[in-house]
Amino acid sequence: MFGHVEAITFDLDDTLWPCHEVIVAAERACYEWLSDAAPRVTRHHSLESLREHRIAFSHRRPDIAHDMTAVRLHALSEVLSDHGYAVDVARRASDVFRAARNRVTPYDEVVDVLRRLRARYTVISVTNGNSQIEHTPLRDSFDYSLTAAEVGAAKPDPAMFHAASTRCGIGLDRFLHVGDDPVRDVQAARALGIPTVWVDRAATTWPPDIDPADMQVSNIGELAEQLLS
Ligand SMILES: [Mg+2]
Image 1 (cartoon, rainbow, N blue to C red):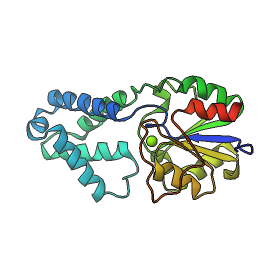
Image 2 (cartoon, helix red, strand yellow):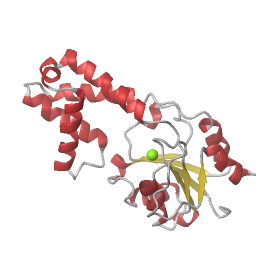
Image 3 (cartoon, rainbow, N blue to C red):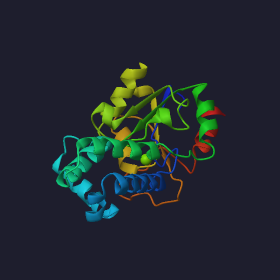
Image 4 (tube, helix red, strand yellow):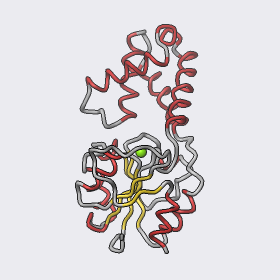
C-alpha cells in the first residue's frame, strides 16, 4: 500500500508518547517553583487561573499562538510584571517548565520500531508541541526533527510538511504521515496528497465528518509490520 514511500513523518504527542500527564506535571513543577520565586503571583493566581490567563493571552497574540514556549513565556511575563517581578523570573520559570516537559516516556514499542524503520526510511518528527527532542529519550531516533515554533506555523498548516521535505530533500509525493489527530495530522497531510496513518491508542471514535486515514493502527508496531514485512 505504501510501496512508493521514502520518508515517514511522525507526530510526537500522543502518537509516540503520552502527553497530558507530562504537561500536568510540568505545570505543577513550574507553579511550585513560582511559589518560591514569585509568591505574590501564586497568592493571587491558582494553576487554573494562570492557564486561563495564558489561553486568553494566546487569543490576543495570534502572531505567536503556534509557539507554545513563546506563549507561556510572554503570558507569564505579563502576570509577573503585574505583580512587580522582573522578566528574568519568567525565563527561569519557563526553563523549569521545559525541563519537566521533556520528561516524556515513549510507548513501549516506539524506540525499537523507529530504529527498524530508519534502516529503510528517512524518519522525521513534526510536532506542534514544545518538547525539545534532543532532551528526550527519542533524541537519537530521527533523521530530522521539526517544531511549529521553528517553522512558524502549527499543523494543520502545511508549512511543517513543506519544511520537512526541503530539509530531507525528498518530495512530498514520497512521504507518509503518522499521527493521532484527525485534523492536525490526517486531514493536514491528506490535503498535500500524503498518505496517512491514524494512531488510535485509546480506541476513540473517528469523527464522522472527516474521511478516514489510509490505515488505522493502535500502535506503531502494527505499521512496522505492514511496512517491513
Ligand atoms: Mg499528537
